[in-house]
Image (tube, rainbow, N blue to C red; front, side, top):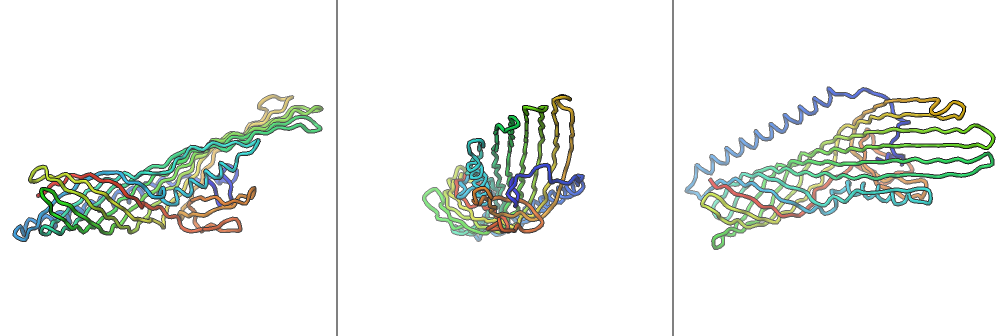
Length: 369
């Protein structure tokens, strides 16, 4: 992952800290208690709605449970995740020169799975009110490399220098909205057509993982001196875990086809608008590195040094575009920090926004009570 200074994170500027496992366990217990509380609230509301519907059959009220699943098309790759992917892709493309090479295999995020459960109260033939929740989630992963290989001849002899940097990247998002929908039904011959819309309150979780394996090698073969060489080898694991809450809207239209008096099949076109920002959380970095030297009189390696390191922090997930001194171009990035990014080489700095704006198809089973 690029930092605000435009450099890939390396081992040379990290400070060792022990990982705070107590903090992570407490955070997991807090998340679990929130989800248990959420399920309890839905169960109480469903019971209350069901009691109201069963208590007034003369008014034409009815209770239904709607279970559905489908797939939606994301308009812009989830917002700043796609901008960050494009920023890294452009950087890898611009990296290429006669002695520089790169690879890039990280596809745009396109589809969003959607699983729903909803309690629907029908008020007469035309109107309905639905209260439900959904489970939305995706994983965007890829890999890329930035490499360099050069050599030359000086008055004192020959030299070679090369390094390889292999990255793996993954964004994993889950979002659980609590939705209130207002339905309008069009009874037709044997089926019902309907439209609906309403607001949602989202609970989002985003995990970012970056892995790096690097290898740097340098060698000299002087004409009038002993040969010399060194190598760096290492790996890093960087993780961000953030969460966010926010509002959104959804809507759609569909058809309900009766299968039995108490069971129906539904199919609908859906749309969703949700921009989630103000992501907050923690980051951790760990890695190891080995440095070795070769000197012709003493062999390989005559000197070896190995170090392990770790670091951690917390803050807000920011988005910005950093300027590469080499070509003065700007490249998008996202990272968690305790202060907004700034400086002469930074522009468009703000809190990151992950959106779920999409359209899709949903199929469902409706159980009528």
